Amino acid sequence: MPSSTFSSEPWIPAGRWGATWLLALVLAAVVVWRLELVTRAGGQRPSVVDDPVLWSLARIQVDADPGIVAFVGTSRMALAYSAPEFARAAPELRGLQLSITDHQAFGVLADLAADDAFRGVVVFDLLEPDVIDPEFFHQSDPYVRRGHALWRSPGSLVNRYAASQLQSRLAVLAVGGRRIITALVGKRQWPAPQWVAIDRQRSSHADYRLATPAALRAKADRRLPYYAPTTTPDAWLGILEREVEPLVRRIQARGGDVVVLRMPISGRLAARVDEAYPRSRYWDVFAARTAARAIHAGDVPALANLLCPDEMHLDQRDQAAFTRAVVEALRARGVLRGRGRAAP
Image 1 (cartoon, helix red, strand yellow):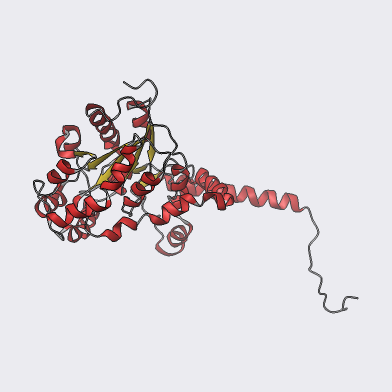
Image 2 (cartoon, rainbow, N blue to C red):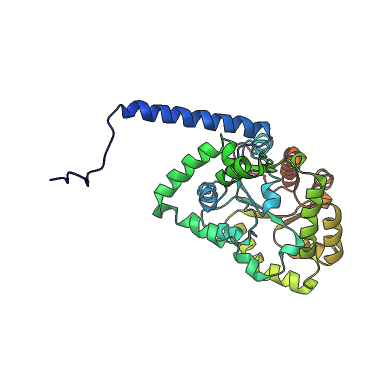
């Protein structure tokens, strides 16, 4: 029997709870709508969170289709490749964005080499300073492991799919709750829009008009010390021959192909890399020895003329030109001949 003074039973007020919840949902929707308007007015675009599960959803699309062209690399490739433009330039083929920002992608190349089903083409983003430490060859391993363990957690796939649907539609989600609270309570200033937005196909789009020249300069300044010379030509070539060449030959043995693309870079970074890694002693020797198709951006006028606002990454307005130039370079070298539907 309940005490006459206190009761252990929870007290639930009487009333029409359906109407209460409906009102709460309406108010929440109004708040989100207002925040979305303010966010978009400030220049922020919707952006999907790119994590190992989202990468895995792209990786599971790899099959035995020889018309697959997998774009593999770092943020350089992620910000350069345009999926819509590839579809227009090569409608008979299937392009896949498998690049990983802030991770060297040698592990992805190794994963495709180990996949007996893969018979397509890999376009592999490489810059000379990437080849300085064999440990870098394992940076993308967590993504690869996640890609092979998807079947263990179907719930995470459903959650990631649903989250990506919302993230691709609401710009306010790209700002994040913490930044919004800080803006409303602390700084009283709405957060500046992020330069980069990512879509559900994992294509990244950088709008460098949103960045100040000083910010771009500071970003480039922080990067420069990491591109000083750190290895001899023989050591550099030795790493590639030991770590990459077996992967290239394994893919080619199944009818696939590998194109190693020296990406466009600009400004002081380009000068630093050219000085630290003279082309005649590094790239040209590699190109002569490798079984892969080696393409230097400097040898393709349409790529050589592209400028990187932060010295390393292309602006979204140059993605279409980059993608068309790569497709044309692959066609000119016969890489795409006989692949896909009604291939030219």
